[in-house]
Length: 219
Image (cartoon, rainbow, N blue to C red):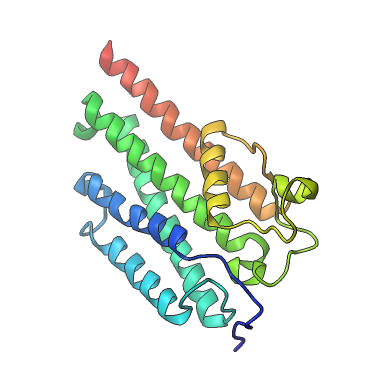
């Protein structure tokens, strides 16, 4: 099992931890039928994964090990499952009609919460899969990155040794969900193209159906 070298300086953990805590709070803002069980189940699992990651890799994110990698991938899977579940539930309510989506306030609140859930989930997905994850990126910049950031394409405009960190992937998740397509970050790997296509389609469906339903309510 590999451990971090003293030379390696990984990224700070607090941006991902704060964002994950926000994601853990989102299910409590949704109606009870948006969860297959108690609302606290998925947030509790995510909290366990977060604590385990902090204990396994305290301080900066720089410990490369199979255990840490498994925990990180497991956390992403939980986020994806949670986001997929609430997105499907919202789409069903919007298409068939539901009590939560019959009032303008409730409709906009639920739609916004689900949309933010999708943004955060894909941000974690990109952050964890790009270049082998944050631990791997702390050691070297891949010759052929999965995601090409502007700093990769124009190294003269950034500091030497620049590497994307969690906030960069959060920005990527936000822009892909608002523009419904890549903006300044280009997907090069096939998994990245597929993920960005799914995110853009999900966001388009959520916003499109919410807006259509809202217009119908106000008529």
